[in-house]
Image 1 (cartoon, one colour):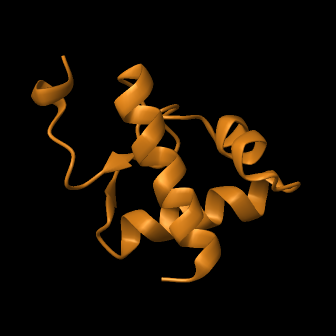
Image 2 (cartoon, rainbow, N blue to C red; image 1 turned 45 degrees about the vertical axis):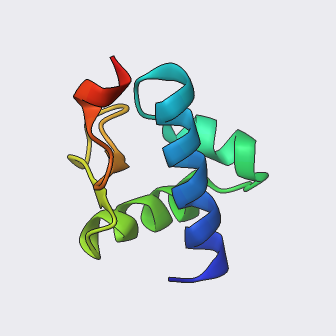
Length: 74
């Protein structure tokens, strides 16, 4: 995992813990200081591809860390 992907993973994880739902691509862009939506999206979905996150591409706010148990948050 690259440092940029690691940063995005931590943003996704903290967002889930704080709010109880996944961040949008725009949320991740804002929190990491990224400037390109396409690059941010590609990094997010690469985390899904390598198994660190779960999500459905094209579904807003569907990404979450694979290790996160949703019922523990609620």
